[in-house]
Image (cartoon, rainbow, N blue to C red):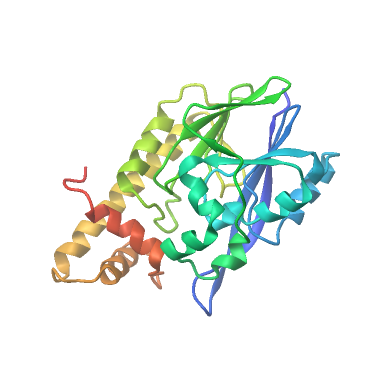
Length: 285
């Protein structure tokens, strides 16, 4: 059976500070039904990677009928404006993500990122606000089930295509050799555990990995991500135990990132948020 899920690799540069950029990659996905669906739009200015991939499938941008954002961060919504202007597509995301997608100014104020607008583009109006359990019918026997998986962001979702046995997981799974990036530790853990309970997933696509995880790789990836959260938690406790009680969040974050082997430590609002969520709940297990 031919896959209904078609990954599209989008390379970009992530500004770490005013002087430094690092090479990164994000994946968008084309889902083929009677209606053509695009999942995530990558970073602004890189829409040609999507249009080229469509051309290779004998399709065009104008064939896209639905755009779904797995979450609200700039590297997943940057192309929204382009596809709004060049297609008649409807836009959908979780209700919790809509606030930041419909107002990038609010997102930037609440989660400042270096070079934010060079990645995020412009705000767009969301047509459909999704919730957990929603079924999206693309026609031709292709459906998507919405799985609400907050933690990486307030509005993160996964999309499961039962006909293909494929799960598009966005950024829900933490890259264990990268930065800790989540806004809520408890929700992140719960979301990972929820995905582990899914028994009918044959392939799991991540937004930062070229090939999907299959078979036992799926559970291993989820377990490894959960173990990484435990490691970060242990390092947070260690660092807090060594620093003065009035230590600043920046100092705690710097110490944890160094212990994780991330040097020079990228102390910035998004990593501070991740580390501080470990200290916002009692008796972390």
